[in-house]
Image (cartoon, rainbow, N blue to C red; front, top):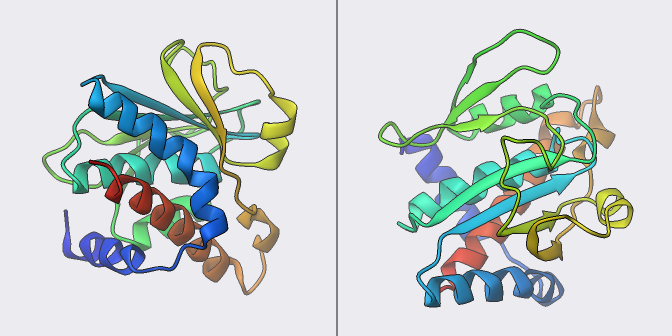
Length: 202
């Protein structure tokens, strides 16, 4: 990983996580530990309404941090209850945190290659429904990253476990002078919580 991303990870590793949030994260931690105990591969699908912001942050950070912890059995995905586009402030925030991002297509829903390490395959980022053929159709954990998707999608076909880990939408700051700060805060929160989960695994 490049120095900027390594520094970002060092910074988020020391961010405080409340006991209330740790309780919310516990089902994901238990699921991952059980999979590791059984030497099974792990697939995680982060789901939000539009697959444009929080679900991408979950997908990208969990894949990146799995590499950081040398856990090669985790593969992450993301999806929505509908497809829109990966939000440009998310792309800019991740670039500023040290990710190398290449836009591979120019349509309204662009495809991005997001690299966290020169020696690793990039995370492919684009907006899609959670049951898109790009994503697994069975044997995965569904992580609901927004309350709207959590309430509107009570059953995720093919999932082994469905865990609501919801975050406030950074979209509320779009086109304001707080936009960069709010997006960075949300990215750091999601990264720090995924870091915590992985750091607790045996």
